Image 1 (cartoon, helix red, strand yellow):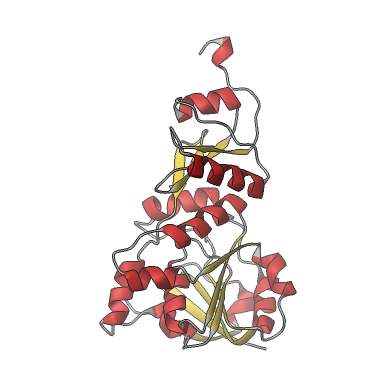
Image 2 (image 1 turned 60 degrees about the vertical axis):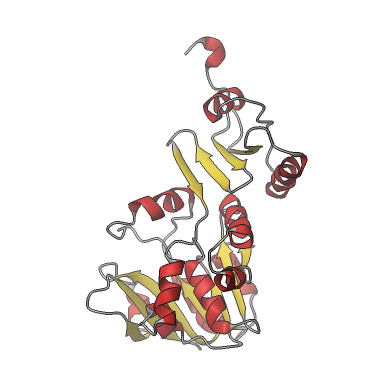
Length: 275
């Protein structure tokens, strides 16, 4: 690399587009950059590698016609939205099979769910199915660029099932850290509050799907005080999903009223009652 090719010091994050954007796509990117309060760099006809070098940006959020993609220069990792295993789990519910999320949350028509760690929003989409059009599902994402990608994803991702797609559109993605959001909620304002945080140990086989999300996401350990707040906010129950080998903090273990799992499943849904 020559001296004039060395990366300059640049922003942590910037927005760009796919190559040869039309006016609508460029307008979308400009609006996104304004919302995130980050610079926007014209893509022109250069590669992302070259754009990283020219701008010195650590990360680029690329607005494309099919999807938005977040790229990290240093790690060579990219992230884009997809609803994970939602189609398989949806079909399982159709066939009357068990779904541990549905069983542990006990959501029904008209209920409300606050998903404090929305991730790919797969379980928020299941929740939107369970609560119906009269219910409410709010998913929190603390990293602004991930929130933007997920919000765009649930609003635009195309699925074969039009019903499933319509249900996905009802998930409301909010940019917020649950540690800040929960204290602002009224007591008993949500029927169920749900946590699926990152734990130090990853599920076997989840590296490809969860790895990029974990890299870009908020890996702060589950906040005990926030779970206590969640019990105040929940009318009925708080549910925490975790690997069976990753035990909850001792202060929470003694408060668990129910555990939903199976012998073959590697995850546990621990239920705590509301205050």
